[in-house]
Image (cartoon, rainbow, N blue to C red; front, side, top):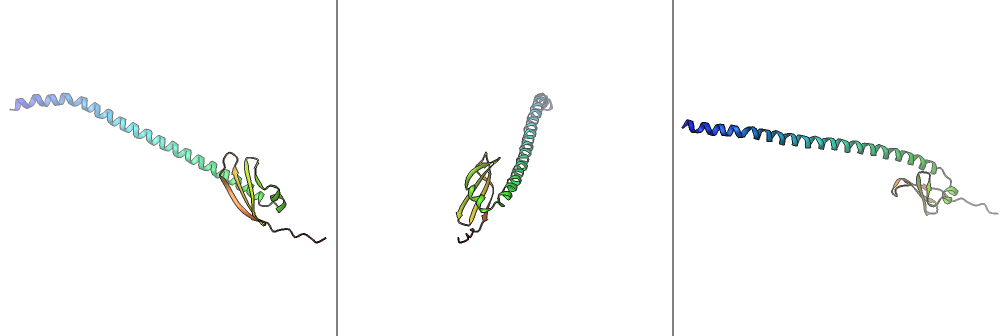
Amino acid sequence: MRRRNVPQRSARRAARPGMVLLEVIVAMTILAVGGASLVALASASLDAVRRAYAAEEDATRASAFLDAVALWPRADLDRHLGSRAEGPWRLEIERPEPTLYEVSVSDSAHDHPIVATALYRPEVAHAAP
């Protein structure tokens, strides 16, 4: 009986080297796909960080511009009512109440406001003639 099993074992061993090569190819493919996925994830994360820094810089510059607009007197705010381009920004000033101004600054390329505020300016009392 032993002699019968010997040829079967050698037949299995002869087929085994091809299977090992196939297993190695499959394992290398899985590792390559995993590595490529990690590289793509790292690249996307780096791009997201760059965009976040750029958005923070834009918000800082828009806030500085809004700080300057907040110092305008009532007459200047009235002259700039509506929406208009101011350098790289789009400035929108509305007056929902006689003493209240709503001011927003957005990027001229996009319509969404970056910073916004409300300003109170009392009505000017006119002297009687």
